[in-house]
Length: 179
Image (cartoon, rainbow, N blue to C red; front, side, top):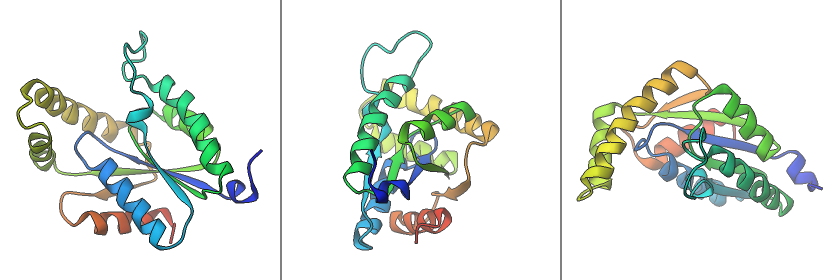
């Protein structure tokens, strides 16, 4: 059974293509919330799906992530978190619904965007000396950006092409009405 604070809790998914800055922005949002004294948790959903092999038909192990998220979100909410900041990817409206059910609180989705040349540059820095990983991420960034453009699972969009991480985090918090 969730505490009273958990009943008024909210979750925010920071969604976007690879290399756009989801995890970095989620961590910065967490820092701003901590400075404001807001009980919260920051979760990188990629870590909750890390197992091999992924089952057939679940290329990115989404269902394992949901199973893990149900338990973890509940633990944080029971411990008094009123904000759950999630960094991850959903590609379909049904995935949004499933994610909301897994966290058990209202879910807002932010789509982080950046110009693809900027994303390519970020990925090249991140995967320096890893040509196969770099190529996969470069291909996936364009593919996923196209998918996210078509599915419109977000409540609002924030551009990360320019501006500091702290400025982007502040924009996300304002747009989510978490001030």
